[in-house]
Length: 404
Image 1: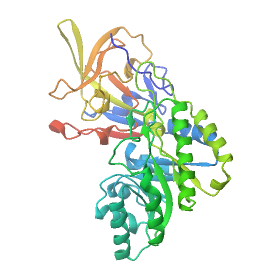
Image 2: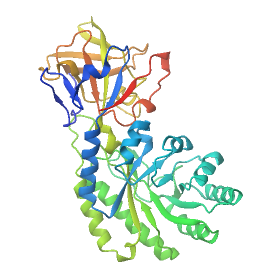
Image 3: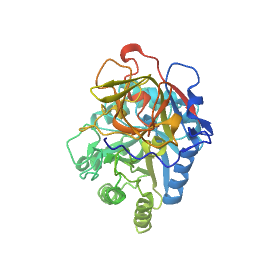
């Protein structure tokens, strides 16, 4: 037996012992169709938003990072609860069309078409280099618009314990901190509407203390830039990095620690009283709200081990299969949704239907005694699930999506 991550505390069994999502049994979400489904629990998202508001109070705005999950019905729900959307492409700009919220766009490699699309929609462009700044200014002049520009900073520090570190290193992301001041002054001189700064030091951290220290270091860096340039930023995007527990022994992030640290520091900095601070969150908002449901097609024995073959797989949930950045494969939280209340008696390998041994959803995990036709639930699938997976691999059916 190998351990798995903790099942999020938002889900329980109904009177029949089945996993219940949004008041509906897991099997009912699948119906009779021969394909898996993602189900996103709106109540979980609402709870996370409430937790954020209570911890950060009114001083820090909440933006949703669309890359985490760009499904339109989910975006429509989230749009009523957050203060803005952060985008990574003009394709994401199209996905949020008609949702009346402030927009920003970050990411290396923005094409001229990306920049023009952002300029025409008054999107704040987070510049990743001096060359991108030159192109944005030239394209804005050709379009006859005043560009809304901010600078993404490649910080001189890292977010300790982050799943992906995006600071303190040579990077394709952002402008090195020592070159930010001169670029900011150049943007103002060029007549741009200069909004301020964006900094993202890392992602998927479960250390509130490490995130707080990173945010405080960011505020200190902004103060140094103000002293250097004389420019008080209208807004500062502090990034995010808030993680969720996927794996054994991981604990939920205490965001009150982060909110208290930011709040205290900003109270001590009256020069920043007119600056709008933003946290952009994706995974933390929607990750635990999503459950991937897939039916068992076959149960077999091989060399003394039990294999449960499902109608889903890594083409829908690449990260859960261990093939999206894991150095050593670890089990995501997984359960038999049809027998959610039953004791875990069966050690099994849960696999997908693809013709590759990489298609592994549960490696020697303990489940309720599972039969053909039962529904397997893989948890923490609200972020970086379907759109972060190779949906067309072997031309299997694409999973459906539902709001619960």
